[in-house]
Length: 192
Image 1 (cartoon, rainbow, N blue to C red):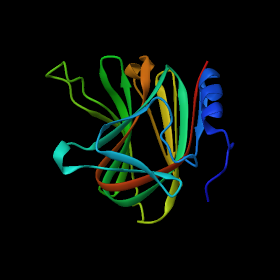
Image 2 (tube, rainbow, N blue to C red):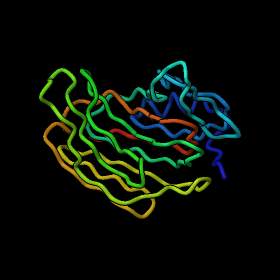
Image 3 (tube, helix red, strand yellow):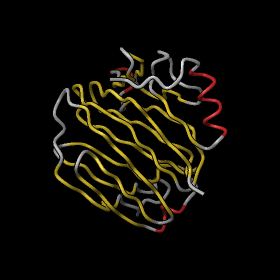
Image 4 (tube, helix red, strand yellow):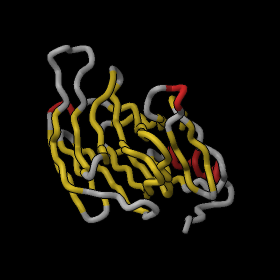
């Protein structure tokens, strides 16, 4: 069931972003300001955000949420609706930083490789078995503070640390490989 946060959704979004936090439930039927589909298709369907790849992009679907920060917490509900994989990714001003990845029967925290450094490789900071059941909603929460990150998905917990995590972050990206993922009740806030 979707939570109705306010009837004047746009006013709440603007006020929340000024305070360094936002809560989104998609009851307005629109994507909030600052949420941009970079690849794929993202639409609001029956009060939830639906994202999926499009064949013409030849790339996973990507929705960027602008929220510059260093430390932060993001939480939301998601449902796998045919997707092969789903990521919540963080970028820094010069590229990819790290992600929470759900794919192939596992959930992982992965520090992304530096695309500008040919010797760089991704680093798996934590992984656990996780098989998302189609049609079931799961809660995901990810907190970054200093050089540490902690993510929970349902009942599993992933923890990792790396000095690169202290970099300034540009926001969040929802990434969908294949068919749909549904996303709802998104809340994010920046740390001190």
